[in-house]
Length: 293
Image (cartoon, rainbow, N blue to C red; front, side, top):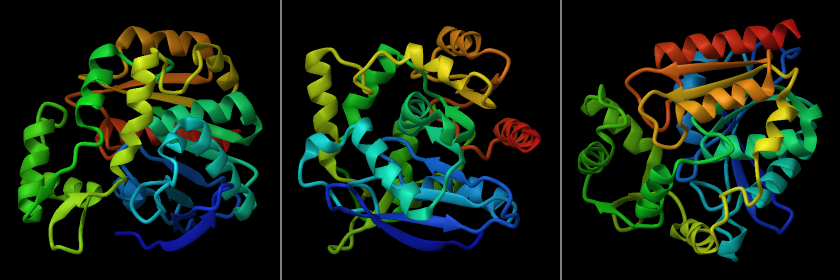
């Protein structure tokens, strides 16, 4: 595993937040800001860092309420606009003017908000299995499991639970792969049990939005696609995704134009882990486009 240093920053409302910083080999390259999905954390990008660290600097935050970042006092701050403010403070503290955003699911929604508000920050963008709208089936699935506590006596039990729940998402995974994923998603608690590594209250805004009929981002995101024009943009879609439909992904490319590329990852649902050969090749092409300017 490529080495990293741990860093911390303070959110605008006073939470101590954590990030991993994987060193890059070329200071002239923009860093990769890796933004994880709803229930995931900085560890989710270990496979990507194992391949790219040393060539590129990777900054992988734990969003508030996840892993080594503090839990919010107010659960209703677990929303994309607050995450955007947190990330803005991190970028200011690190004096990073431009970067390539690598956004998985929720991280992709944050990336879209960055494009809408600070497109000058973006040297490139990867929207990993997410778009301006989320398919109803996928949203229902998310609501069914987010905030539901789990506890397992061993890592193998946690891995088997992941397999039972997500076997159709990653049909090619063996026990070793499920164990690796479990160690990215779970932690060992003080009672010696394996538990999910996030604040269960992150589900509260999602439930509230469902009652109001609002999108997760809280706004119509289709107009944001125009903000990615002339920015190298990769739209990555799991072939079996229930979050990002093929028609939505195709419309995204059409709205963005020639700077966007759509790549579908075979035999994967929501969301690609970014170590699949198809994903790796597409990411390499994206980063080549970034370097060409």
